[in-house]
Length: 132
Image 1: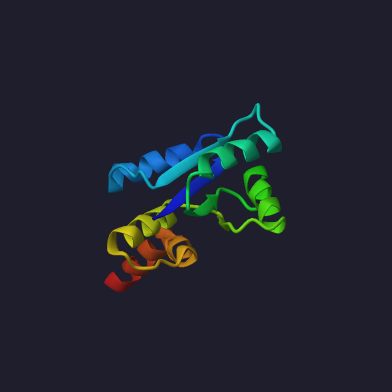
Image 2 (image 1 turned 60 degrees about the vertical axis):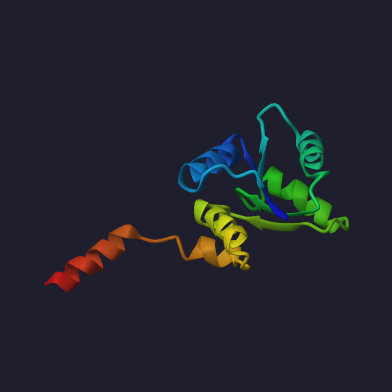
């Protein structure tokens, strides 16, 4: 079974998992690895290896392209590790992953994330224009 590993600066990844669980219920297939202020790249890499060592298959979502968590995993990929990594994680991506597990259908995580970035003001303005 594929797992989802959320990595981030600080506790963002843990909060994202908790918020998603408010909507979708408990998620044993989602693991979190926060980079804490007192930690460096090697500390983070060791935490990542410890969490993922027993996972046969996993996808990694990072908070920010170019940040330490993403950079650590990128270096692992460049050194030959077979890891699927996306940066810019958001809740629709996590919910898309969960839905793909529930329906046993593949999900396009990029599509899930991008299609759910919406200007609400623009939609409301268009609705107001339609009413006139």
